[in-house]
Length: 75
Image (cartoon, rainbow, N blue to C red; front, side):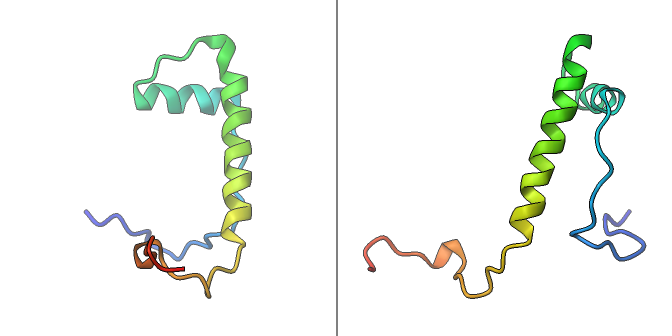
């Protein structure tokens, strides 16, 4: 089964926010034990991380060479 989406996905489109319930479900799917009192905190943290990633995706890095091309001895 292919892992590519059946329709194009805009990589910068915002994702819906996490809820305590969605955080609990994700933790359960991942096999990570998560106490009930942590669901809201995990949801807020996931939203924050995604907002930072969204900002990083907006950066224009076209003139930056890929990391494997970096050499320590070159200045």
